[in-house]
Each structure stands twice: as C-alpha cells, then as structure tokens.
Image 1: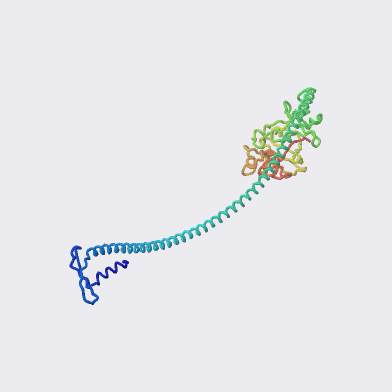
Image 2: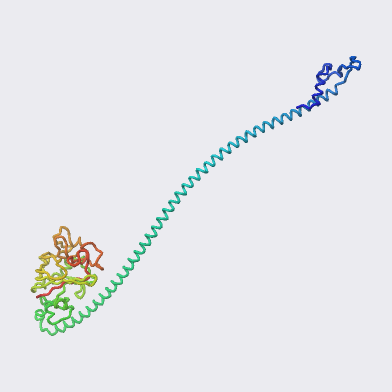
Length: 413
C-alpha cells in the first residue's frame, strides 16, 4: 500500500492540467504552465520550477515503492511460509498420527504376543513344577525302598555272617571229633592182629558202629587194605550210616565238576564232599543197603527220604541208580533206574543236556530234567536263580528253592 501523501502528489501531478516540456534522460524543462484563476475570475498564467520537486517526488516514489514492495514481499513470503508451515505441520501431524497409530498397533500386537508367550511359559512352568514334584515324590519313594532293601541286605549279611561263623565253629568241632575218632581208630587198629581181621571187622560205618558210637571220620576197609576214610553218622535213625555226599556252606563247588571228579570223589570227608562213584558202587556191593537223604532249608526246617534195596551200578552201567520203595517226609523226587550224567558225559534222556541247561549239576535225571538235583549250584538264602537251578528237591520245596544242607548216606542191613 502507498502512503496518502504520495497519492496526493501523484494526483496533482497527473490531473492539474499542468504542462511540461518534453524530457529526455531525466532532463525535463525547468518549468510548467499552471493555469490560475484570479479573484476576478480572469485566467492567469504562471510558471513553476518543478525540477527539484520532480526529483524529490521520484525519490519518494522509489522509496515508497521499495517499502511497499518489501512489505508486500514480506507479507507474501510470510503467507507462503505460513501455508507451507501449516502444510508441513498438517503433513507432520498426519505422519505422526499414522506412525503413532502403527506404533500403538505394534505395541498392542507385541503386548498380545508377550502375554501369549507369558501364558505358554507359565503353563510350561506349572507343568515342570508338577513333574518336579512327582520326581521328588518318586525319588523319595525310591530312596525309602532302597533304604529298606539296604536294611534287609544288611540284616541278611549279618545273618549269613553269623551262619558262617557257626559253620566254621561246627567244622572246627568236626575236626576235633575227627582227631578224637582217629586216635580211637589208631587204638583199635593197634589191637587188631592182622589186616585181614581189620577188613573183616570194619567194611563200612555199620561195622564201625558196633564198637564206636560217635559221629566222625573213620577208616574203613570194604575191599581189604589199604581202605579209605569216610564220615560215619552215628546219630541219625540208630546210626551206622556211611555218608557219600554232604553239602553245607557252599565252600566246595559241585555243579561244574566232570565225570572223573565224581568217579574218584572230591572234598574233605569231614566237611563238604562227594565220596566217589567207584567207592559207593563198592559199598553197595557188600549187601542189601538203604539210602537215606537228609534235607534242611534256610529256616532250620528239615525233611528226609528213605529208599530200600538201594543199588549203585559200576562205570560200565554209567553208575545206574535203582531202589525199591520210598518212605519219608520229603516226597519221592528221586529218579529210578537212571544213569549218572555230567556235563562231559550226557547220559540223561533229555534231547539237550540237563546238567548244562538247568545247572542242576551232575545227577540222575528223568526225561525232562525234573524233580531233583542235589549237586546243583549252591544258592545262599535259597532263592535267586532260575527255575530248577540250585540244590533242588521238588517233592518238598518245589523247583525254585535251593536247600541249605543236603546229605546222602547208605547203611547195610
């Protein structure tokens, strides 16, 4: 906008009917004609020098124009800047709203995922706690069970230790008795004039029983001199029994022995031993014999089986065992008219090998390896091996119980 004074001067300059001489290059005439009216209304004419006025007016106009243009430009620029600023602010606001909306949506989505993950983790934690609790309970039960087993095992060990100590004591007593018996035998032998008389007097324990009445080791002469030592049971059923098998304690292995071992015998006659098949055959050839089997379980209970007309064949018959009738409390589990079998002489009638398959040890077996086997593996406690493994007498304890003590002995009648 131009100032008011400037407009007045321009108006006078343009509408005052003034006339000026022509101007060139800013050099105008020095005067202009200005019509005047006198008081008498008579036209007058005057000349006015406008050179200086023109210059001042031009400068004023230029100045005012510059100011006006500057103001207009400033207003225009401010208006443009305001519009751009507003546009930018609006755009920034929209962008901000969009960004914030997207960010909030992502936060909401992330929060939902986090909540879902937390829920899954919580469920897993609950399940883990439950399993951990179950594991602790099961561990406690197992610990209790193991402690109970350990206590039972400790008790069994103590019992076995006591039994071993008792057995050692009994062996020592038997050795003392053996020494006493041997001294008595030496005394008796010193009184006998000839070896022929000795053979005629003491062929087996039944002969010894006529003069000696204590159980122990004696020297007998079933075929004359030199004879051999046997253990005589003078306490059972009237005494006079010649023992050819005795097991108690498991210190001597029976079930892995071979044919020659059983033929010739093994062990000590004062303790666990097998007298030998050749000697048993010789003893049974002296006359009519009775076989008596003594059995004892791990609870101290005992049972017996007695067989009449007992005979024991020679090696050519594979030491065939035979008997007449049975009586007793253990039940009849002994095979009759069967050959003796070992792991290296498979004389049983089973398609396989009873001594190898059942661990019943060398014995007289029926068709299916059943009923008895007193030379099997020694099992402390009586249980723990497979069916028919151990010192077995089915008629008394079945196929899954192994005896603590077994004794086989014969007596001539």
